[in-house]
Length: 376
Image (tube, rainbow, N blue to C red; front, top):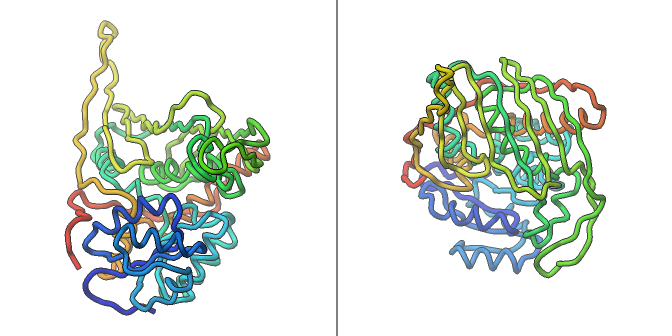
């Protein structure tokens, strides 16, 4: 187990694909963490990413797992091997931050959490976009009572699909992905920050076409199978009250996503795209006079420092040193997964499905959290 107790926390990255650029861009700018190694099954790709971002070492997956200076592994592999790589990280004595989802089934994900707990190690789970100033400012506004009692939410993600731009999109239509498992974590995580844990879900699903075609890159023109529903219409009921209706689709020629609206007794709060860290936040007030046609729209000033991927890992690194809980915990990530799998089951059975897992109070980042400050 890595044993550093002062100075920047050592980080190693496993997975040098598309998303690694976003992580490396921001993690290499945070003073409280130091990226020491990048590993990938394609070692040349790992070495190239390490060189590009000034990371000291790049090479094999095992070289990162066995690096004595690495405290936390950042798992950026495909969903199907998230648990496998996370378990290997725990076995190597490292804390682990994993891209979403935590896994692709409940049993293996629970095994990961139990193994980490027994080893005294932490698991953190993306997305950490919900820890950015956008969602966190909105969450504080709701806690202040700015829209009264929150009643229900509407979220929307619809467009034609990632094969339009992704050079190798087949895994995004495999088990453990699709618009629900790939994009759903952003929206469900946001709703959990507002309403707390999910009690039950209902859904309808469909598959627009059985195969898709890569539209760009070296694989352009190549077809691949669609293994999951590519459109889901979802209803959610929350333990502490409140409801939500959501659409997840990659069958829509109309691009309309990033929509999160929280409707309360005294107004509607419009939250920025949960796949980003910030954006415009507005409150729409109800009409008080039938003769007035224009509703009052208030801008809510965004509080906090805008950062990017790795914000949740940074909170986890600081929390480890401070001996306090981090926010984007493995348990939170598991409840998100349990909710999403329950939605899949509800769509398949066309019945309501109870979500078995639950959560305690969901933590928040303070408004003065500064990722660019050196605190360790």
